Image 1 (cartoon, rainbow, N blue to C red):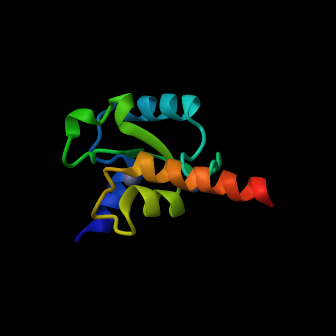
Image 2 (tube, rainbow, N blue to C red; image 1 turned 180 degrees about the vertical axis):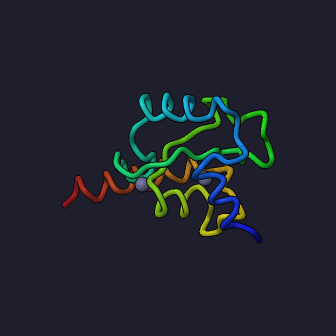
Image 3 (tube, rainbow, N blue to C red; image 1 turned 45 degrees about the vertical axis):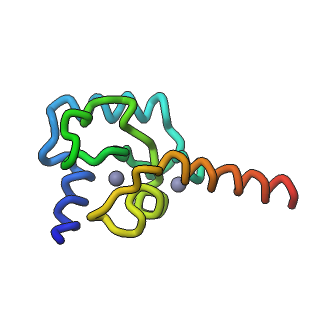
Amino acid sequence: MFSWLRRTAELFGAPRSGKWPRVRREHLAKNPACIACGRTTDVEVHHVQPFHERPELELDPSNLVTLSADHCHFVFGHCLNWATSNPRVREDAAAYRRRIDEVRSTN
Ligand SMILES: [Zn+2]
Ligand SMILES: [Zn+2]
């Protein structure tokens, strides 16, 4: 329901604090890589506890993770549904990352 709207809001920061662009930029400067696949281009900043549920955490750095646009963001951040979110995004992305490293080291 209206996931495109929430998606648009997330991408463009429509309902967000005026401080969000700076917080987002600072987060990406410190955390440039997707926590799942390691990509550093075409990444987004995802709120672990979603903005619509915990608006007070919008600018809290501990609530932010970097995920590559569309793929990792959609899979790990939102469990294939923009209208939901994954409270275990950090653990799931870390497990995926470890698995990638394991497979790479044996090939
Ligand atoms: Zn990724
Ligand atoms: Zn997100």
